[in-house]
Image 1 (tube, one colour):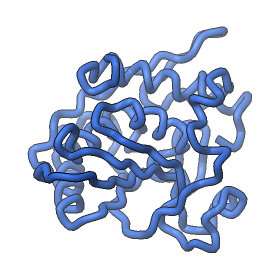
Image 2 (image 1 turned 30 degrees about the vertical axis):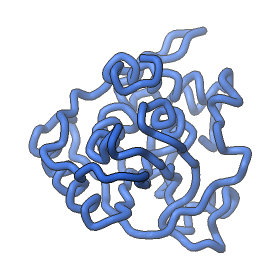
Image 3 (image 1 turned 60 degrees about the horizontal axis):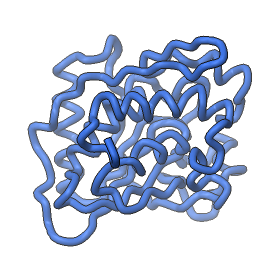
Image 4 (image 1 turned 180 degrees about the vertical axis):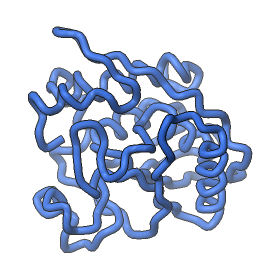
Length: 221
């Protein structure tokens, strides 16, 4: 999201996007199947941490899902000392822009979150980038919070790879590391800035694709 205009309008190839002057691009969801394995539902809340490009769009997608209680934009994979936007922008911190999703496993499963992540939230075949955003901080990465999440995520990446849903190989990595919330200016960015050029070009289409592909998962869908 560093270069917003015109570079943002040149990177619309991710997620099958097209663009028409004066209107947001259209996006279509990838027909990702339900995971063959999933984390069993347990009482209470659980946490998922996912990275896949600019955290503005990830947040915008996941905060609309039934069963999701909270989504926080932040940085994962590096240290506390470099968990800030200026440092992460150097692309030398090891951090990925990520979201921390607090959810109710009785209402939405970890596997369903992964399904939305791969089908709508980002393009898992782009290495160290998403659309116009380039660098390892924009990598596709899953940060499992439990051994069960790691097992399910690893199995699902294999399941999707075998299905050959994309013309290029999946490059999503399973990683470890702490999550650090981003600055307040990055939280709820789409809600606060609905007419921002980057939001219109990249994130509004993702939300539309989410509603079209998973209407029963979306609040008010």
